[in-house]
Structure formats: C-alpha cells, structure tokens
Amino acid sequence: MSAIIKAEHLSFAYPGDGDTPAVPVLHDVSFEIEEGSFVAVLGHNGCGKSTLAKLLCMILEPDEGILYINGKDMTSEDITDEDIYDARRRVGMVFQNPDNQLVATIVEEDVAFGCENLGIPSEKIRKRVDEALDTVGMRKYARHATHRLSGGQKQRIAIAGVLAMRRKCIIFDESTAMLDPGGRKEVMDTICRLNREEGITVIHITHYMNEATLADRVIVMNDGRIIMDGTPGQVFSCADKLWEAGLDVPQTTELLWRMKEAGYNVRLDIFDPEECASEIAKAIAEKR
Amino acid sequence: MRSDIVFGQYCEGSSFLHKLDPRWKIIFVFSYIVGLFLAKNIFAFALMTLSIILLWVLSGIRAKILIKGLRPLLFIIAFTAIINIFWFKGETPLLPDSWFFQIYLEGIINALLIVLRVAVLVTGTSILLTYTTTPIALTDGIEQLLAPLAKIKVPVHEFSMMMTIALRFIPTLIEETDKIMSAQKARGSDFSQGSLARRAKALVPVLVPLFISAFRRAEDLATAMECRCYTGGAGRTRMNVLHSTWRDAVMLVAIAAFIAGIVLLNIFAPGYVFAM
Ligand SMILES: Nc1ncnc2c1ncn2[C@@H]1O[C@H](COP(=O)(O)OP(=O)(O)O)[C@@H](O)[C@H]1O
Ligand SMILES: [Mg+2]
Image (cartoon, rainbow over all chains, first blue to last red; front, side):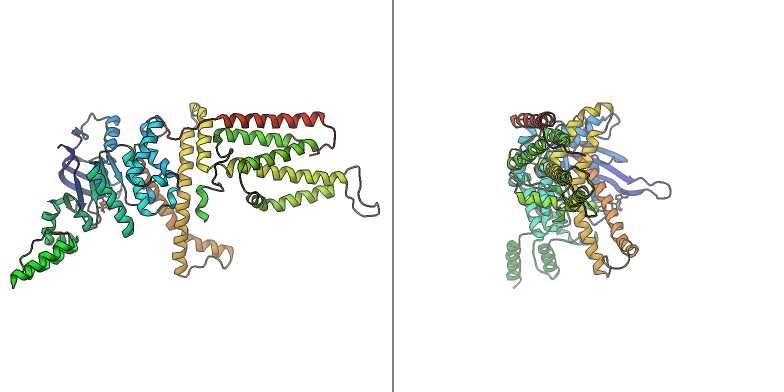
C-alpha cells in the first residue's frame, strides 16, 4: 500500500495585515496517510485541525514543509494550476455546516456540481450521480429540494457530491458536529461503509470519541502539533495525556482507567460496552 | 411555508406544458404577450379567450389556483374598469339625458375587454412560466438563451450562478431570520408595535447578526465550491442538458397560428373595434 498523502514538516501561519499580527497555527507537522485507511483526528477547538484539512485540499498553501499528494510534490516551484485541480480531484472535503456547502436547490443537481466543473459529458455525469446517490442511500430524494432535507441527509448529499467526482480520499471536517444523534449515526454508518466497501481513504476530524474508536488510527493534535499518533487502543490507553490536551476519552476507557487507578488489573483498549463489562467482571473476580 | 420560494408557485405535474423546453417557453411567453396586445376587435378577443382555455387544459392546473392568482389584481382591474365605464365617450348612451353623467355601451364593452386582456395576460404568463416551470429551470433557460452574449463579454454564467445560489440560500436565510427574531422576542424585543421609526430600530438587532452570518456562509460556500473544482463557467458542462422535443414544435406552430389569427381577425373581421 502506498501513501495517498504525505506531509513533511508542514508549518502554516495566517498572514496578518497592517496592525493585526500573523497567526501561527501549524508547527512542523509530519504524517503519512495510507491509501484505504480510516484516520481520526482529534484536538481541542482552535488547535488547527481545519487549517490542516485546508492545506491537504490545497485551499491553503503551507509556509514551510513539503506536501505530497499521490506521490506528487504539491509544494514545489513548478506546480501548475492543472496539478492543483488534479490533486483536488483526488482529495475531497465534507464540511461542518451542512447548509453552507450545498450549491444547488435540487439534490441531483448539487451532486452533479463537481462533475460539471470537471467538464464531464452529460450522460456520464448522470450515471455517476445515480451511482453516488445509491451509495449514500439517497436515490429516492434525487428530485427533492436540498433545503427541506434533515442535517444528516444534507451531509450524505455532500458525500455523494464528493463520490461522484470519483475521489479516493475524503476529509470530514467535523461533519457530524451539527447533527442530532440520528443524523450522526446515519453519516457515520455511511463513512464506515465507504471505507470498508469502497476502499475510500477517510480522514475524520471529530470531537466524538466513540467515532474515533471506529478508526484504524487516531492522530491527536494540540496547539498546532501532533502529540499522539497510533491505533485507538494505543492512543486512548494514555488517557492522562488526552485529558492534559483538553480532550475527553471514550466512556469505557474512562471507566477502565478509574478501575486501574483503584488497583484492578484491566486492559485499557476496550471500547465495546459488553467487552468492557466482562473485562471488569474478570478483574473483580481475579482480585477476590 | 414561506421558504417555498425554491419552487415559487410551481405546481408539480407532468403535463404537456410542464414538459416544454424552458428556453422555448420564454420565447413563447413573449410572443403570446405580443399577440395579446395586437388584439383589436371582439373576434380577436374571442380567440384570446379560446387560447387561455386551451392553455389551462394543457397545463392540468386546477382552476382554483388560477383564480387565486388573479385576486391580488382585483383592485387594479376594478379601478380600470370603472374609469373606462365613466370616462369613455361612445355613440350609444344608455342613460336618460337628464342625468348629470352618462354611460355608453361602448364604454362598458371596452371595460370588459380591458379586464379580459389583463386577466388573460396574467393567467397566461403564469401558466406558461411560473406554474409549470421551476425557477431553476427558468434560470437554466435564460442562461442558455443568452449564452451567445458571453462572446461580447456579458457575464451570463456568473449571473445565472448568482441566481442559482440566491435561490438556494433564500430559504436558509429566511429560516435564520425567523430564528433570530424569535431569539430577540424572547429578550423582550417588539416588532409589531410603536411608530415606524421604532419598529425599524427594533429590526437592527435582527439584521446585524443576519448579515454577519450571511458573510460567514458566503465564505464557507466559496471554500466548498473551490474544493469541488469550481473555476467559473469556462470548460463547465451540465448534467441536465435542455432538449427541444416535438412538443416545442407543436407549441411553436400553435403560438404562430394564434398571432396570425389575431392579425387576420383585426384586418378582416368586422365588428366593434377596441380603443386603447
Ligand atoms: N482565516 C483566518 N485568519 C486568521 N486566523 C484564523 C483563520 N482561520 C482560523 N484562524 C485561527 O487559526 C487557529 C486554528 O483554527 P482552526 O484550524 O479552524 O481550528 P480547529 O478546526 O482545530 O478548531 C485558530 O486560533 C483560529 O483563530
Ligand atoms: Mg474546525
């Protein structure tokens, strides 16, 4: 497997103008994203997650460091507009506010928007749009008005728009943050299915720890730096470090952590409530 | 309810008129209006009446909706009718000479014809455009009709994109206005009482957050569009290409026949000549 995204020592600051000073946001960020993987990114508000996502989508340019997309150096001098569009064609993004990313009034026209921009012939767009709507389970809403849909449905339409462009990698920037629990589950189920069944690379920025436990890998950021990087089990086992960075841990981890502090011999990398219960039962029996 | 602006007054359906190409529809409406204004005598007006009945049948829209559409015009229609009845000097007086005012038969006919023309004009254009065409189809139609103007640097695509985005965001902004107004009401704001100046002042705390959020939305949307490879109109294709069908040809012939009929009746049919 190859890396679809590779970042080496990225730094970025929002330029200040006149009397406002520049805002340094990212400092020396390095990581690699394997094709087909599911990576969750955690970090408190304002730590630079969205900024990082925008760098990966080529909306912003890093001040320092090298960014490879599909093995191509996107920060080199002789990069053309064509290369940038080509990279955007590989990496798509779904944003936080479902209302602010849909362009058209009718569902299928919004899904088609990206393909239309790429200049794909009409019949091919039609086919791609129908497929994408099928994939997110929204085919029967094709002719509906976008503003009448629920938040979860809007996000699935946004996902369909990214899929119709045949992108291999999707970045979700807190795409579940504004949804109710039902909508969040809808979207998470879709994301997981895309990753498992369609082999789409997923980078999921989130504040919900139970969503992070679904990923293959968790990256934790704090003040523009990556402070932890590993499997959910490895990362959440260091609950103290996460608390220090102003983050939560999954409820099961917290419970097991407390058990451990109280002197029980338990594993910390368990996220399933049933498994967690049996682990605790075992530990209690052992202690007796 | 109010956020139904996306569909405007569009009535869902699959009638003959619903299936017409929006580009042609725009042309048809203009031609139809020209035809209506050409009508000069009673026979031409009869043809006009026939045409509106035909349009109504072809559209499959309930008569109730059409009549409702005329209601806002009731005052203007009545006003014009009354003016015409009392001011028109004809040849056939209807009242005894001793009365201090006079009404002529021609005045009454004239008033009736004016009312008929206004009613047909409004109903006909609504049937052809607003009731059977979605605003989005209309925008597409206008964009493609005006496409040749892009060659002389008229930003046709940009205007149509603005129109599309406006249609997309108006319901969102209306919803947001409702939310902010409720929030301000909960804090004791009163939008329905006091002098005009006072009420206008009460709106300021609604408009300011609305504008701020609209700018934030615009910025988000711009980023999202950039992410989806939007680079303007050049090199863009469309999924829904507009197609002209046999229906448009039939309608074209019908409209041409209508205008020809009106002109011929004006010239050859004897009878009362409408004055206006
Ligand atoms: N357009 C901008 N101009 C200046 N500063 C910005 C801009 N966008 C974000 N910032 C600042 O950059 C920091 C990181 O923001 P962001 O990447 O949105 O964080 P996160 O998504 O992790 O909450 C914040 O301190 C924020 O104030
Ligand atoms: Mg953010």
